Image (tube, rainbow, N blue to C red):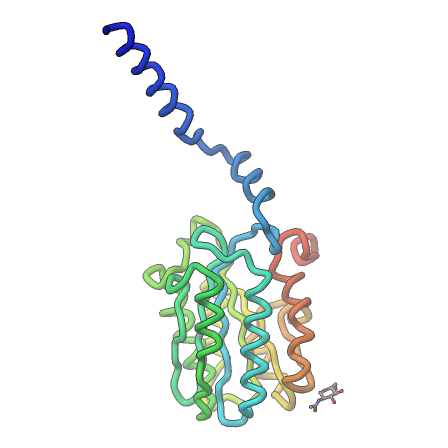
Length: 235
Ligand SMILES: *[C@@H]1O[C@H](CO)[C@@H](O)[C@H](O)[C@H]1NC(C)=O
């Protein structure tokens, strides 16, 4: 009786021991990252899209911006402990679609992007940047704390002249450590784009002729955002 109990105990113990995951060393994490299907090199980001939803953006063009966002989502390594994504749109008002901690699954994000409705009003770009810095990149809304050194990136897409002042708000955001990419479409004012985007402007400020062309930036952002793809860090 006693012996069999002992054997049982030994068996149970060895099961438990085997199941217990080994302590993760940094090496293990690296190995895991390489093993999972990673299309963005496993580099975590806190990424927020800030989308111009003004009246000058036609409905078809608004759909093109949405498909651009979905195409960028496709290559990101989205997960709670990997890349987090938020989406803000702005017209006369700023409307948050989802925060960095609203969704941790691509499908949910894609659905939210699809259901985003065109505001078709003004162009309060400065207000949108303020909201992005103060709210969307707050820890309460899912931004990782600074000591984790997760890059904070805002991709601002706009087609027009802001109705408020942008320079100061953009500068504040950059001072807070947010790397801003400015994507301009059509006859957008280059001075505005430069006021928004981070330095160097050659890396962060992009102008396309029309909304059909915005799709050409998907591969550009793939190389900019994903680890091992970018020359940005070796410069
Ligand atoms: C968009 O711009 C490209 C490049 O300049 C041009 O070839 C194309 O015809 C334009 N499309 C529309 C719909 O204007």
